[in-house]
Figure 1 (cartoon, rainbow, N blue to C red):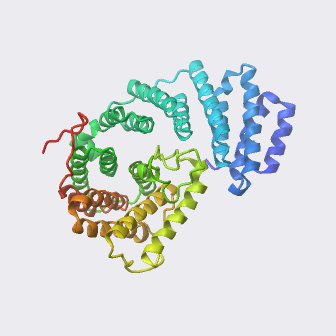
Figure 2 (tube, one colour):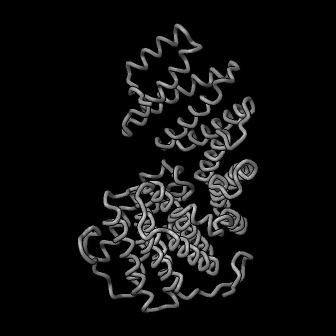
Length: 439
């Protein structure tokens, strides 16, 4: 249904109506204020924040008077306020608003219980993401686990709702240093995908999900599990038509960005005995990349994250002596250490572009060639030292295959994944029951 745009005149009329009939007019005024805020350009963020703050205060007053029918609207308004606080870099206020939104949604559900996964669960998931962004990982685990437990109780056991909630839980677990728990939850999420019919039904999603899991398990130090998942991802690609449709491009690219970011978290973190990585601002207390969910990026950090990308691009161009966007092949250094540095910087550039959502008009003409360039670098390193370069090459090939899947080139993606799977596995130690050292 088409809606007329909200203007200052719309809000003025709603204010007048709220004075004459508060019961009907105040909720309408609150919604008009929220609508006007979303019509503001991003460079007028303080103006938008004040509008949404007023809307939230209206709903607070309504529910304070015991109007339970407005609890849902109040929760939605506080959730919107949290988003605008994040965009304005008011991180503590954003977290407080998320807490309030989750509490209001819980109260609304107590008044009108929902049989399935409802608004209270969504608000609690939002709170878990906000806690993780703020570095409060154990609290985030508790919130995300409550959401996952609810999904286990009401969602289809092999459905996507349960899978996503379990995957949401793995990230705060890992960030809290609870790696074994994270791996176990990851396995639970992936279990239904082992069935061939389920993989066929989910199509590209299954291949992307499994390839991304391979990246993550490799990053966790479980090469045997990563190797097995690469084979599964390649098999999932082979069950798809050679060339797919582009209808789900945006969702698939968003999913690729999430999975790609998860495997790059370590790349963006400083080691205890090393300086902060290039492009990372040590003054920011929040992590720039959590890879939490398609719709839950750390909005506050996008500016510094983009500035860091500029620094990374500058370092890449200093090594190659040419613009990163120059047509044709980019000159590669002969020195192996410098080439390895270039490979690392190039992947971090690709990672940040994916997270920032800077999707070019011609995906196949820009994103995939950049990832192919990374593969070329890693192939050269692997040829010089197979033992040291195998893991890096497998990771670069997996990155490329995931982009090829987004571009609907399923047959080519299958070949890329088979190449990664054919590489010899690096030695593993049976540190976990999830990574047996078996053929």
